[in-house]
Amino acid sequence: MISGLPDASARVVTTAVYLAILLAGLRGGFHALERLEQVSVGIKLAVIAGLLAGLGGDVLQGGGEIIHPVPKMNGWAAITLGLGLLVTVQGFETSRYLGGEYSAQMRVRSMRGAQWLSSVIYVSYIGLIVLIFAADDVPFSETAVIDMMALVAPILPPLLIFAALSAQFSAAVADMGGAGGLLSELTHRRLTAQQSYVLLVGAGLALTWALKVFEIIAWASRAFAAYYAIQAGIAARYAIAEGYRGRAAALIVFVVIGAASAIFGAAVEV
Image (cartoon, helix red, strand yellow):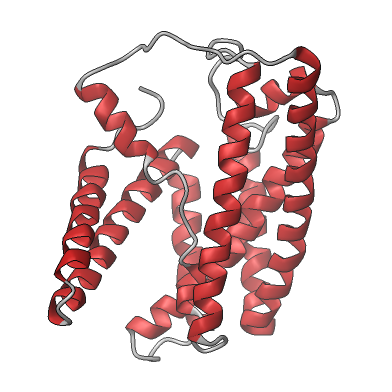
């Protein structure tokens, strides 16, 4: 939930955001959602740049020494946790379902660009974090990263909260647009994008009020893993039909990994 707010208040805020996005989608359609996301993503990237600069400056000032924590789990428990981590980075397929708005070439470029940029951000962030913090420096919680950043610079926590809100807002907007396009595509246009938005917001509100944050993340991660396994299976079938057996074999490996992550992936609370 939102840092500093009790569960009920955080759920009320989440509900208000859902309804605001739904209103924008119903009144202005996809392009209204797109404009909202452009603003929120721009803010988010600016704050991330400041965060990485702050972490980098702290490493340079402190000399930086890589922390080597003693593993707390091994065997099957470690494997299942690793499977859970495989779907930490997700959501880059959003533009795949915007065929009514953009060309295939543009959508492919956007997905690849998002993957490369996010990979650089994630790897840089993790690389800097391990130079600064030991695993037990900050107690585990939904907002532990904010507590860690307070140890780096006092200005970072409020900026990070702002970036987190912007990130979740942009993710909600992007998923609304992408999922609306997917539902419309799967129903062969029987459902309009606006009708899909209503169904999606209803499902989101049900999850918000029925489950806790980590439970929602766990269900969403399993759903993503299963979805990726299905998509890899479809791609493998077409690769076999076209005679690309080497590519098909690689895709089948992804099917197995995705299915295993959906079934056996463990949540971070373990």
